[in-house]
Image (cartoon, rainbow, N blue to C red; front, side, top):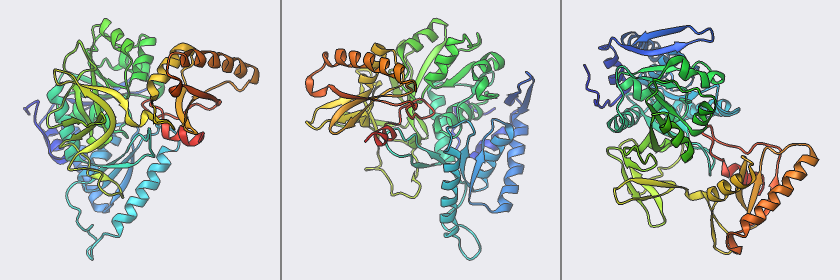
Length: 452
């Protein structure tokens, strides 16, 4: 039996280990309440067989559509093992993403085709293919990170060293695999260490999937947890919730702990193949210890930089983004006396106003959301000043006027609590929902562009 802490260096090595296991790898369900299962041994044989077919096609870059099925997972593993670069398209992600993925794949394919030798082989490319993941694009336009099967497997191993799963565990996989967090924590981690991965049935059934599949471990983003708690949709067998992708409000953590569920908070980036720090002290989930091999440092301006064996190769079509082997994350943080990492927010969430004063946008947004009761707010910079944007406003002019009056009143009250130089100077209202990533983070870059 494989060690529960074995580190895999490739998908081929991982899949070959599947052939030695008799337990259940994948569990699926349908809308009629029926379930089906695939053993590790059968899953491994399916992947190996499909990889031979893919190799015969001599493809270079492929978009694999993930539809929460065993066949979709087989396609992903088989294409990478066969040497294809893979972009995962997920029908649940925001409109336009999959078209963007197809365009990116075509561009990458064209680059690869120009690199073939006289025998048709891609020059300088051997072994397994890469996985191409889009960054979230919260403060800049989205980029494509080039990850390897080795970096992803190493990420799964480092997570296992901090939070172990194994045979007998059921991990509910209802995060998008087109993002590194979902790919590693909701799928690869469980398969690497013998858990059963339950593939969520449908985005519309998400809140019912925990009661249906009865997971012991649930990787999720805060908005999913909030929805499940509001509907009392967490199963009694659930022992661990792993939260990532966005900051988690303390009240959600408290409610989970009240139910006897251990709460772990993870921190990572697409560029680092997901997690680089995770909770170890359950009484303080937001205080995270670095994962094995993750060299995390706080720079002079408070920015987190990291060197890790899970690092991306770089961004597709761009020069390497490293400084002395370190990646500067754009996140702000600090270490406490125990060496635990605490997050403060995004460096680019800090506005530098025309007079040099600095505004940390999430603090303003949280305060104004609490004061006004409006959930779709963002602070941006316009003409050198801080400006509040209110999204999802009613189209009825009379109702919007009433909301504006309330906002003006609350903004005035808020402004009285801070220095004049950092006060909000104006309010912009729009009927459109403010653009966000799939994990709920504001796409501040897009909002800034909308109202510049």
